[in-house]
Length: 100
Image (cartoon, rainbow, N blue to C red; front, side, top):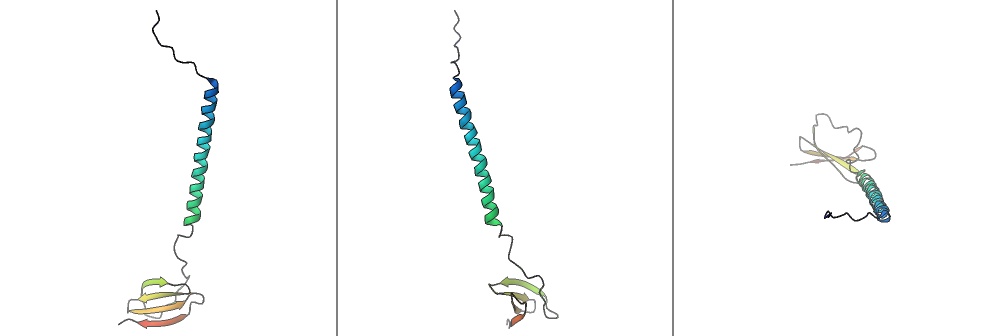
């Protein structure tokens, strides 16, 4: 009188099939992670800030307060309320604006 239920026998074919599915899922997840990292790297590689000039020569006595730039120029706002606009390629002062 043995009333203990016996576990069903394990099918070796089903175990191989499940092992294959787990291996495929793992490979898919690893490849997906690599693709996501590669997309982040390529997308945000240009996000490290604007291309700034190496050297900016300000007129004597000018202290910079702010910086902005356009496609072919950049501008420095000074503490004495002037805007100095420079050419991006040559670095030559194009224009000076006095703010009232």
